[in-house]
Length: 128
Image (cartoon, rainbow, N blue to C red; front, side):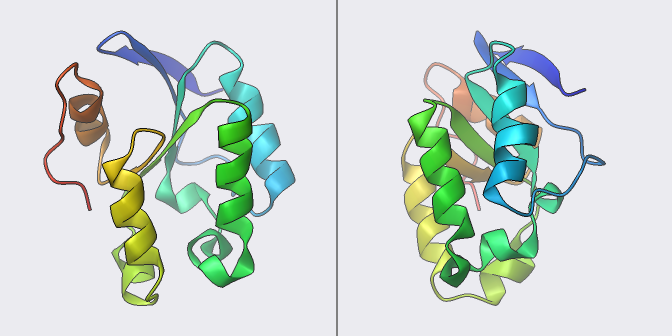
């Protein structure tokens, strides 16, 4: 079961790295969004838990997942090294850069960066 921890007063559902791979929208609903109803505002999911199709924007999977998070008014943070996916895509780096400028979807290298970004005046250490 994922843990809810607070970073600067923000409840964060920290998903376990060894959980089931999220390979479709129903998996995101079941394993990420459903679990967040424990009172989390942010869902932090290890990058390895997301199927490779999430990072291939042509599949539409990432867009569907991001829309579900928006619909449920939850923030998604992908935690971990996604450099191989960034290198393989021309569109993904743009998505990551734009997402990291906002407040609802972030791609961060580790949980320390997430905590920094959630600080009241948090700007993070540069993101990915």
